[in-house]
Image (cartoon, rainbow, N blue to C red; front, top):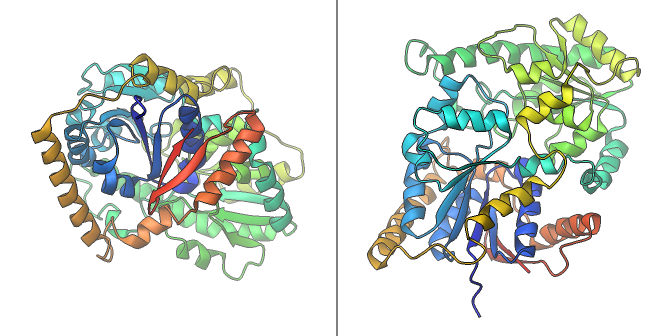
Length: 450
C-alpha cells in the first residue's frame, strides 16, 4: 500500500558541511514514517519530476532559486526553507539583497530559523509575505550537542593519530579565492549596487594576504605543532598549498565534517567564519585574527565569541598561550545566552525533532500535497527537463558555476554502504533507527525509509 505521507526531499549542497546533519534529519523523518529522498542538490533537481509529491527542504531563498521553486510548485511539491548561510551573515541590507527574494520567499509554505535573531531577520525583510516562522534551530547544531558529539569520536582519534597536536586555521575567502573565479566580485564595481560586495571583497583580499603570511610565523613559533589549513568548501586549495610549501609542519586538509577537527585541535584561528560559533558551542579555544578590522564588513558574532588578535605577534602569543594551557575558551558574561539568541535547540528536543514536529503540524505526515492538475504537472515536467538539459551542458563548460569539477569538489561520490555506516553510528549512539534502510535511486541520489 502506498505511503500516504509526503516525501521529504532533502538536498545537500556542500557534503562536508551538511551531510551528517541532514542524514540525522532523514533518519528521524523515516522513523516517523516519512519516505525521504536525500542527495546532491543538483541531482535532486535533475530527478525531482520523478519523486512522489512531497516537501522540499530549501537551503536558501535567493532570486537564483525562483525558477526551480516555480518548477517544484508546478510538480505539486511544497517548499519549506531555512537559510544555510544566515547564522554568520553581513548587515541586513546586503543580506536581503543577496540572499532573499520577495518572489522566492512567497513560494515557501514555512520557514525554519536558526534562532530568535534569524527569525527577526526573516520578519524584517521588506518582502516578507507573512509565511509562518518556526524557531527550530538547525540540524548542523544538533551534531554539536553533548549527546551526539561521540558520533565523531573515532574521527577525532584518527585525526590526532595522523596529525598529532595541531592548530586549525579555517579559511573563509570565497570572495577572493573562489573555486570558480567567475563567481568572485569584479574589481572596480564599488559604485554599483554591488558596491558592498566589492568593498567586502577588497577587505577580504587584505585579510587573505595576511593569512597567507601568517603561516610561516606560526610554523616557526610552534615547531612541535602541526598547522592545519582547512579551506572553505567554495575555495581553491592550490593557493593554500602554495602558501604552505617549504614549511614541514603546515598542511592543507579538507576532509569530512569540520566538527571532529574542531574537537581535535588545540586552537582555532579564523576571521568571520561560522567555525567561530561552532568552536564556542564545542568549547574549543578560538582566535579571530584581524590585522585589519571593519565595523562594516566584519561579522560581530564571530569576533564577540573569540579571543582577538590585531597583529601577528599578538596572534602568535595568544596561540602559544592556548597550546601551553595558559588560556582557554574566551569567556564573557551571558556567553551561553548570546549563543542561544542565534542558535536554538542546544538543549531539549533536537532541532531535527522540532522541524519534523512543524511538518507534522502542517499535516504532511498524514498526506502528500494535493495534485496541481494534469496541465500544470506536464508544464513542470517539461520545464524541469529543459532546465536539466541546460545544466548538463553547463557541466561541461570550464569556469561555469555548474561545471562538473565544482560539483565533485562540493559533493564527491558517496556509496550506500558509507551512508548506512553513518546511520549505524548514529543509531548505536542514540539507541534508535533500527530498520532504516538506504537505496540508491540514481547517481548522488538516495531513498531512506523504514
